[in-house]
Length: 208
Image (cartoon, rainbow, N blue to C red; front, side, top):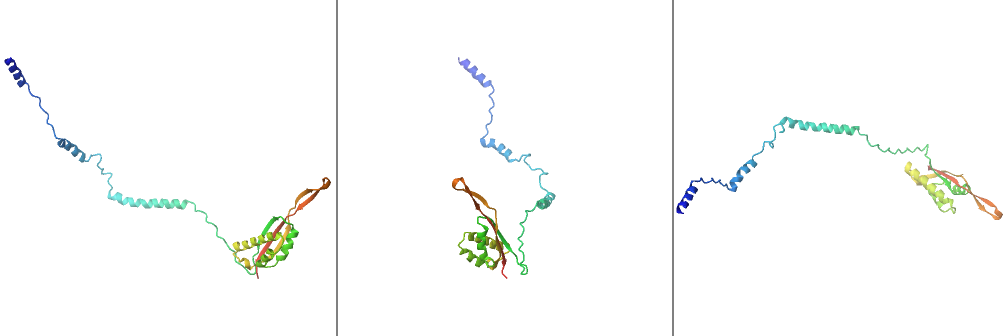
């Protein structure tokens, strides 16, 4: 038994022992990777053609005025917005005084009733006509008052005249179309009803 044990020990001693790999520390293993990461890659390096040269830098500011000229040419070609026409006010001539007119059509009153009122204000100044119409006890006086204020507004807006310095030059009432209606009467008869209308007109001029 002792001889067999010696033989086994001799065989174990004769077999070559496997070589052990050297274990590196983690710090040593990471060093080459870090060096590889620090080294710039050839692909990331800027090429010599991409680098701006002095000639290219001088050419860049010269390109900007060209863009401006294009923008200016486009702005010139674009149509301008139409300007509003200026208001032209005629010059007042004492020898040929202006006449301001106003009209009211299809007023629901007869021309005869309208003439009874307009005869009172013909030839008077605007302030006097306002007082007369304000104290006239007729329904058509209100229509004449509105027409007078319309003529005064035309003079102030179109000719820049003062309404208190105007007088009534002409005033007239013309007949308009008549509305025909019928009313039933006794024994199956019908009587006509005529609802008359009139056209009123007034003209103003500055006082002498």
